[in-house]
Image 1 (cartoon, rainbow, N blue to C red):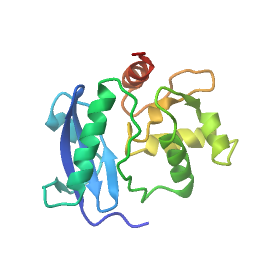
Image 2: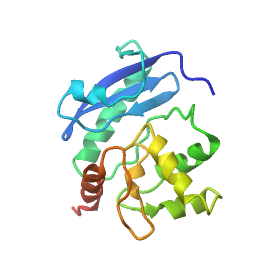
Image 3: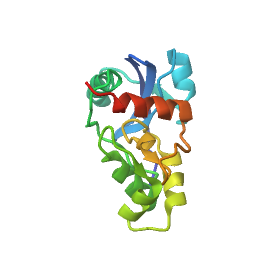
Length: 174
């Protein structure tokens, strides 16, 4: 499928730092990890030719919604993210694996093998790892909740320390 014609970014302040969110006309295109400042947050973004989101853009409301949801998440409360995601430019297999991952409940982990089985490709655990690597919207599509079959923490775009921190955050009991 064709990439969006325009991409817009907004920096979102969370309790863990600045997060860069990139929006298309179809929803969330890319999301960075929390960083100490906006410049560092934007440096993580892979999308090219992004322009700053202004209030006149339809994505402004989505961005406000995401800011509320991320704020709740980083305070340690369960969140089901509700912003639309732009699934364009993923393969059918990646889309299936990522949509399955988006539905993994807060505080729960599943194995790459489980995801592979769930999307109808039981021998494709390594391909699931590739799909997780292609995830442009971590946190909203919580690929940090996908772990090795023995529970080990493997591969994560934000680094294993970030994966561990997110899983620890989600394991805290009120």
